[in-house]
Length: 115
Image (cartoon, rainbow, N blue to C red):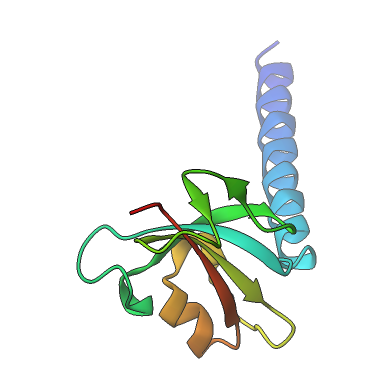
C-alpha cells in the first residue's frame, strides 16, 4: 500500500511538471502579435515611453470607446505596436513601451483619454 502511494505521488508530480513545461513552451512558440496594447502610467510623465507600462493585448483594431480613442488628446491609454522586428524573452506585459522599443517594437500610434 505504501509503495502504491509513493508511485501515485510520483505520477502526480511528473504530470504537473509536464503540464507546466507544455504551457511555457506554448508561450514561447506563440509570439505577441501586432495590435493595440493597454498602457498605464504609474508614475512620471505619461507622454514618455519609459513611464508607459504595457498591461496587455487589447485588439488588432483601434479603440473606439469614448474614454480611450485616437481622437482624444489627453493621457495615453493604448498604444499600437508593430512587432515585426520585436525579439525578447520578457513578455510584453512586463515591459514599458520604451523597453519594448529597445527590443524592436515600434509604437505606431497612441489612443488617448478625453481631456
